[in-house]
Length: 132
Image (cartoon, rainbow, N blue to C red; front, side, top):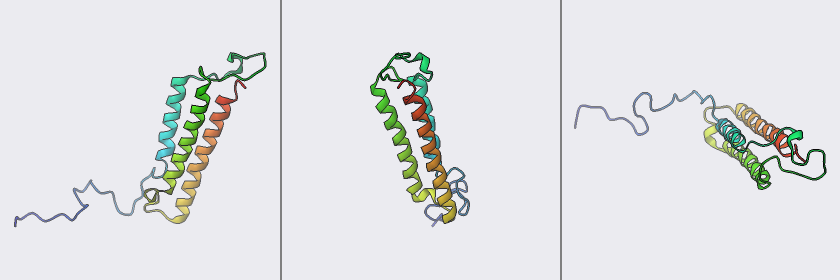
């Protein structure tokens, strides 16, 4: 037997394990922030029309897409729904609840879901209704 003490499982160096009583600051908000970044990058790549005067049907009747391809309207809606689903799923995971009281869990979950819902609705209205 060597002279080094045996480290219990799951306990490595001092920096390996977070403190037991301190919750992660952004726990439960990672899907909200990560999804927002993905949506912004997608909008920067797809470059939708945001001014109704730039629409192909400006001054006429009919529906047009804010994107170059009409199929991207559905893709954008599915992307927003996927983002909202990821936020809801993250709130249901026990890792988002770690070291929090039930009231705090509920308030953080409600805030994350409502922020995601409001942002996705505003984006959908702004982008998808511009040329309709």
